[in-house]
Image (cartoon, rainbow, N blue to C red):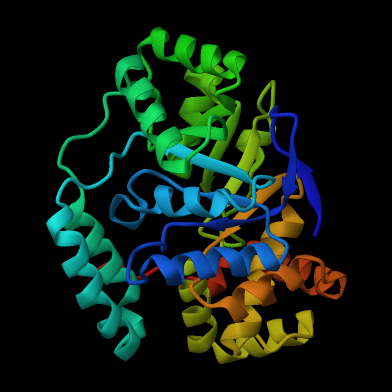
Amino acid sequence: MQLIELADTGRTTTRLGFGCSSLMGAMGRRASLAILEAAYDAGIRHFDVAPMYGYGEAESCLGEFLQRHAQITVTTKYGIPPGKKPSLISAARRVAGPIIKTLPSLKHRLAQAANAATRPSERATFTPQEAKASLEHSLAALRTDHIDVWLLHEASAADLHDDALLTLLEREKQRGTIGTFGIGSGADKIPSLLAERPSYCRTLQYEWSVLDANVEAARAAPAPPFRIHHRTLTENFRSLHRALTENRELCKRWSASTNIDLSNANDLARLMLKAALLMDPASIILFSSKNSHHISANAKLADDRTLEAPAAALYRLVQAERDQLFPSQPEAT
């Protein structure tokens, strides 16, 4: 699998990364570890986690996996703390698993509801004291003395008013506790972060897919940050698939242009993931799955050069014909 320099950490890793948000959710620990092994066996070497993933248990699960695979790279975060209602965790897992198997379309909404039920009401204030405590907790959970990428989770420019936090981040990097730091937030917050708090933006993680216009805001920065992108599929895939299903003529024409049957959900998803890898070659692209076969297929896709031309064609079509794809709704009278 194609490798990339991981920001300013001095390490290399794979361009395709595995998101650990689904670990320790409806899956138990054994199944979660098996999925991590499937990603590793497929050639993936970068893993993304956060303290609040998996009802607060995903970091420790990844930490167990790390004991067998020290050469992988890891991103974790500070800003959204883990849930503080452990009694709800096992109940949520027992309830969610059977329901998702019966009604897989409810998976996303159930995951949101379960995380909301176990998430604390308070929000990080992004102080050096809170950050240091969170870092120490993550190091312990991951069973390591070093984290490759440490991101401020859902931080905005307005949150970063205490320069002592930046001093802490730079000191921990110098100590070798973290390889680099940055911000993982919504794409809408990136322009103001780059303009107002560039020193925090060594690495930026935010959503990007073929439905988004470009990544020029980050590329145009005086010192372009390293980028990690997620949500290449999920809701973006569902939105595009729905639009093509509803507009058969457009789907037929686009399928002819790409030489791929875009009415086929699996083929469309594969092409969207390939387009993300192709159109932003200096970034890591994250995906998540609980299916080992899907993980293997995505890893093979990353190295499949035959999909480069159709993936580029799909991106150009989306950008050129967005108005036809998503016609504006008439205003109610």
